[in-house]
Length: 285
Image (cartoon, rainbow, N blue to C red; front, top):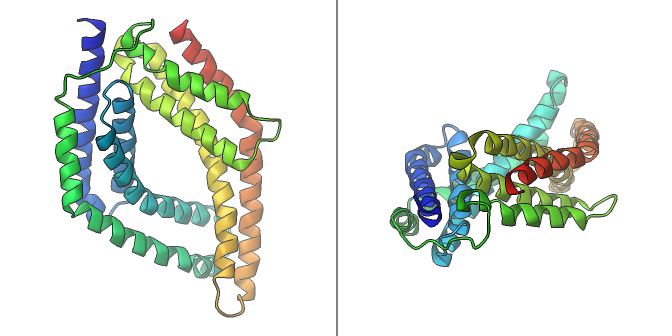
């Protein structure tokens, strides 16, 4: 099998799998019985977009996938925030946990609104057209072959790896939160690209995927902590009357825990990046 044929077949296989995942998870996401359905649909959107970027230039389909990802993301982000803040309240007394729920009520209301918007999107013609277009793309033969070595399937990691390392090199000693969030996105793109190359370098690709996921998780925890602190402050500001003293107290405890989590992530992300660079270099050299 030629290089371009192998790449094209892997892209098509990837797109078929993501199309099937979206279809299988749609009803569960609509019903809302398990937040994992929305999460896995969002992951499928990202993997499909990574497959397109690997060599199938379909900007209209990519734009539609981005739209779907935004619809799913609004719900998923609120699910993560609620789960994370409730997890940080582990060890609180029953009265304090009750105050936490009082604090989080605004997030619960936002989540229901986001779910209504998402359900409307998943029941609409635009979503059905997207699924049709994704299915058609999975049968496409128009693949742009990379011009450089190593073999095409492995070479799909070269560009996202280069972008990740360039972004990291541009950071200072104490990078802003937004810059670390952007770095995480670069890492996520590298991971999804690497998953496509597994058929030609299974063991080394799995090592790269594992260390990239660890890097991504560290910076994901960092971003969650950043958002959580801002969210807590916003929820306090949303109270129309005086904030009950127990709510103020638990809000302060939660912020303290989120800052500790953020500090831990900042102390460990760079070592994880070194592992990513080492594993990617072993594939590209």
